[in-house]
Length: 150
Image 1 (cartoon, rainbow, N blue to C red):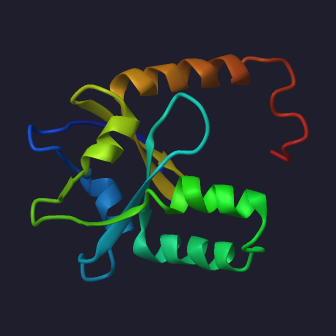
Image 2 (cartoon, rainbow, N blue to C red; image 1 turned 90 degrees about the vertical axis):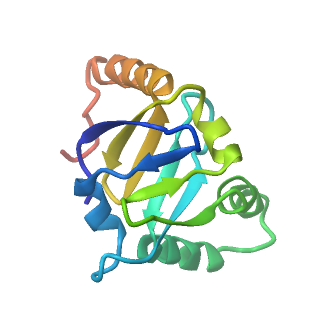
């Protein structure tokens, strides 16, 4: 499971180094393989969602079992599966993020990786700060944990 927060900078070519503590969870047992990166769903704040190949395959298999002619299924596939890209890490643990994914994440070279249980999230620093503020406001509401079974 992914947990924690790490700060990294995009380089001038649009590459980002995946933090070592997250990299081992993304790659196969030999330390090789691919990751899948897609755009987050919903409104702002926006980020990128990063999956190991195995977790992504499991997600696609679940989606393939859904009614393929339903409006919700088609919207989900169009918004989440269509922008997804298979990416490879170089020997230094960096991944080249395509322009459309970088634009979705937001402006700036400063980024934040956050563990999100079964996936990794990648934010521009300004978008992460927005997300933190929204989350803090929600958690501060009385009875926030009620009904969650925690």
